[in-house]
Length: 140
Ligand code: IDP
Ligand code: MG
Image (cartoon, helix red, strand yellow):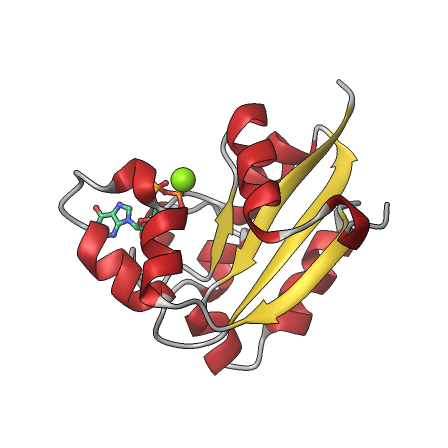
C-alpha cells in the first residue's frame, strides 16, 4: 500500500439535494483527505471528453446529458490506498446492488443518478485528476 490520489465527483443529483457536505463527511470519517475541490457546471463537451472511455456504451449519451444537467463538485482525495478505498466507500455502480452503508446505497437514486464518481485505477486517477486540476491547485 502507498499514499495515493484519486478523482471524485459529486454528481448533479448530489448538488441538487444539497448533500455534498454529508458525502464529504463520509470521506473524511474514512480517512480520505480532500486535497483539491471545485464546484463546476460541466458543458456537454466536457462531460463527453471526461467519459470518452465509455463512448461506445449504450448509456454514454444519457450519462453525458446527466453529468452536464447541473453543478458537480470535482475533488482530489488522498490517503493510503485511496483508489480502492474510495471505490469501497462508494459502493457498486447500481445503488440497488451497493453494500449497506456505502454512499451509493445511502444516497444513490438509480444507476444513472448514483451520486458519486471515483477513479478505478492508478492510471485513470492520474488522468482524471489532471483533467480538472493543475498541480498548484492540489494542496496535500
Ligand atoms: P462506475 O461509476 O461505478 O465506475 P462505470 O461502469 O465506469 O461505473 O460507468 C460510469 C457511469 O455510467 C456510472 O457511474 C453510471 O452513472 C453510468 N452507467 C454505467 N452503467 C450503466 C448502465 O448500465 N445504465 C445506465 N447508466 C450506467
Ligand atoms: Mg468508472
